Structures are given as structure tokens and as C-alpha cells.
Amino acid sequence: MISKAMEDYLKTIYKLEREGRGEPVGTGALAEALAVSAPSATGMLKKLAELHLVEHNPRRGVTLTPAGEKVALEVVRHHRLLESYLKEALGYDWDAVHEEADRLEHLVSDELEARMDAALGYPTVDPHGDPIPTREGVMPAAASRPLATLAGGESGLIGRVSDADPAKLRYLAGLGLFPGVALTVLETLPFNGPLRVRVGHDPGAPEHLLGRELAADIFMRAEDPAGASG
Amino acid sequence: MISKAMEDYLKTIYKLEREGRGEPVGTGALAEALAVSAPSATGMLKKLAELHLVEHNPRRGVTLTPAGEKVALEVVRHHRLLESYLKEALGYDWDAVHEEADRLEHLVSDELEARMDAALGYPTVDPHGDPIPTREGVMPAAASRPLATLAGGESGLIGRVSDADPAKLRYLAGLGLFPGVALTVLETLPFNGPLRVRVGHDPGAPEHLLGRELAADIFMRAEDPAGASG
DNA sequence: CCCTGAGTTTAGCCTATCCTAACGAAGTAT
DNA sequence: ATACTTCGTTAGGATAGGCTAAACTCAGGG
Ligand SMILES: [Mn+2]
Ligand SMILES: [Mn+2]
Ligand SMILES: [Mn+2]
Ligand SMILES: [Mn+2]
Image 1 (tube, rainbow over the protein chains, first blue to last red):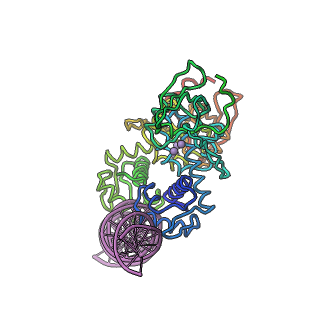
Image 2 (cartoon, each protein chain N blue to C red):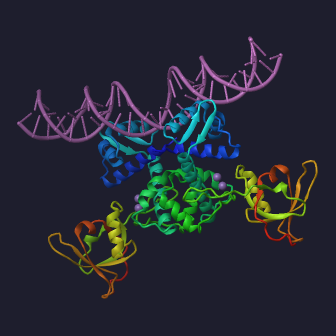
Image 3 (cartoon, rainbow over the protein chains, first blue to last red):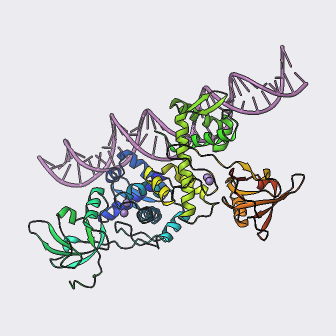
């Protein structure tokens, strides 16, 4: 049986694997991400390796096996469906959904998953724009073009926003910046200065200044939004 | 800290206290209801007594303290709100909600509780007609008049149905018998025979035969339905 | 080539919750 | 009054997960 704790380990290994560049995940990084001690992580990794959910090369790191990745994707699917459901159906703010979903994600039955999915109209991304893995365990590509790579005058649609910091999410919400919103970069001030952006293409639309740290949390859709025709 | 396991013990003690007639709950009955061994129950009772959540008189039984009852009522409130939410908002069948709610009831935050409550329009009973304790920890009275106590020709509104057996719930749903539905007892066959009932007052309305076992699971509202004027 | 330090693993413990087997208390029946 | 029976508690142990302290590995730096 796969416990709640095991699911959290697998989910976190998955996340760290994505963030890193193909290297196996280190015990220390894993322990830190889970807020447990390194020995606890070592112990759990042995158990997970025993179950063939991870490959553990002592002192080198861990990698998910296909079976482990399947479990991780299921948990991520539950998490992101929950975030979407809490926001869309129950009116949660997008900075509050993560914590709630983190608790509930381990208890979502197949039926609850299916009913939330249907109630939401089979969404493909969560409130932060993170892709929702399919029921079959396929993770769609995430929007990955940093806002700062847009040239002055270029525009596009916000695809995704980092959900790591609730305070940033609240600030962005205050500016009206969500996934799906069109954004035009008016200018990029030099020496790592802020970006001046306009919401939408209209000359009359609100403009905002975004510091580099905040801009780094915003990713644009790959697809051309079909019209900087402002 | 009150663990999930403790919440389950307190909830079950509460239920058994209600079912019994004021006598303290025995260790064996509690253990059986929780599907654990008697020694496990003894051990947990000591811990709960330590926390002043129950009063445990060894070899006599347990009683909830006011603090323990408060916790129990919170868990029951979460359970019944969840059952209502799953049915009303997500389209669950009323025989499927109990199992799901039993898993989720320990993870409901104050915010989730409040949002489900509001989304449902502040319901006072769950899908089976069981009263939902208030946020302040008050348990409303449950419909308690057994269907079989209605005289031939008498009618009333179904108030509550035992949720113990999903198969019975499915059968009753097939007959259209839910809380809130009007029911007229046409006759009560002798020697503990079945009840012939009519859904509603109309002479043309569907009639059904209910065996005593099934009838014993149906309880009518105390209030007079204001009109056997059929 | 050895030494050192960062990072991991081992050793030894702790807590929560559950279990079985054995023991004890109390009421019931002879 | 004594013996049986029922029920609860004590004793002893398991498992899952987490922790601290100590030992180990190994890739450089000297
Ligand atoms: Mn999240
Ligand atoms: Mn998210
Ligand atoms: Mn229930
Ligand atoms: Mn119910």
C-alpha cells in the first residue's frame, strides 16, 4: 500500500526532477523540500526503492521509476483539480488553494476526481496555469517562456504564474494579472530594471511596473496570441 | 493535538451514547464500532481521559466530557456537510456519500466548512435527514417517530432515514422515498406484516409495500404535515 | 597522496496506533 | 459459596514515520 507520506515523497521527487536538469535528486534537497531530516528521507527512499517506485543509488540520488512517476502524476492531478475546484466552485482566492489542496490530495477517490473534473468542464490547467496531468498519466507541457524574454512592444497571453508565494499571488491578482490575460511589454528598463507592461493591447488599458523578481514568476503561452494589432 | 484517530473515537462514543440510554459506553461496543481490538480502545481511552475529552471509569465505561462532545459535534458537522455537499453539488447518490465523507471529515478546515455551508444555503439536515450540528456546537433534534407508529390512514413527511445500509438506501431511492416526501400509511398488516404506504396523499399516487425491517429505518417529522386532506 | 568537509547513511530512539495472549474483575448460575 | 462466563485491562510487541548523533564516502585542495 502506498501511504500518504510516500505519495508526498514521490510528488516532491517528481517536482525536483523537473526543476533540476536530469540529474538524480539528492537526499538533502528532497529532505529540505519535505521539511524532514535527511535520515528520514534516506529511510523512506529505501522503502520506495523496495517497492520499485524509485531507483536509489546510495550517495548519488533518486530517480522515479515509471511506476513511481505514475503515482506522482496522480497526486499532482488530484492537487491541481482540487485547486481548480476550490477556486471555481467554492470561490477560494487563488493564493489560498494550495494549502487546502495539499491536505486533501491524498484522499481523492476516483469518483471524486471524476466528478470534480466533470463539474469543471475537464480543465487542462489549474488556477496558476500549471497543467493538469490527464487521467492516463500524461503531463501536458507548461507555459515556459519568461515574461522578460518579450521584446519591447511584444505582447502575449499569460500562461502560468509561479504559485510558490501566496503574497505574490495576491499582488498579481490586485493588478489583474492571471493566466489567460493578454499582456504587452511596453519597455524593459536597463540594468535589470523593471518591465513596464500594459494589460491587453488597448492604449487606454492599465499599465504596471513589474520588478524583475515578479516578472520572473510569470510565463507566457508559447502560441502566438494572434495579434499585437493594438 | 487531536489526531484523526482520536476524532474517530470521539465521534463514535458520541454516536453510541445517543443510541444507548444514558449508560456509559462500553469498551467492547466502542472497539467493535471502530473495528479495532478492545485493548486498542482501552489504550486510546486512557489518552483521551488524559486530555479531559472523556471520563473513563475503568470496567464501567466512557462518557464524553463537554470538551469531548464539542470535538465530536465538529466532526459530525463536517461529515454531514460533506455528505450534503457531495450529493447536492457533485451529484453523488445518497448511498455513496457516507464512505467518502468518512475519509474527508478530518481534513475540513474552517474555511472549507464555511464555504460548503454557504454554497448549500446553510442546510439543517444531511441527505439522510440527520441534523447538522451548528457551528456553535448545537445538535438540532432528529426526526424520531418511527413510520410504523402511524395509524392506518395517517400521513406525514419523511424526516429521516437510517444511513447504515447503502443497499437499503438504493432501494428506498428506487421507491422515491426521501426526507421531505409525504407518505400515507394505508394499512398495517397484522402479525408484524408489511405496511402498505402511498407516496403523497393523492389516490392516484404510487403505493408500495414496506417490510417491518425497512419501515423501522424510516422516521417521520414530528410536526404535523398540515393536511391528510387527500 | 593524503586530508578535509559537504552530503549521506547508519545506529539508536521516540511516538502514535494497532495487535495477540494472558490476566483479572464481576456478575450469573448452580 | 463456588465456579463459570463475559468483559476489560495489562503485558509485550509490531509497524510507520520521524528525530539526533555519529560514522562514513568521496571529490577536490593542498
Ligand atoms: Mn499547488
Ligand atoms: Mn497550482
Ligand atoms: Mn454518514
Ligand atoms: Mn448521513
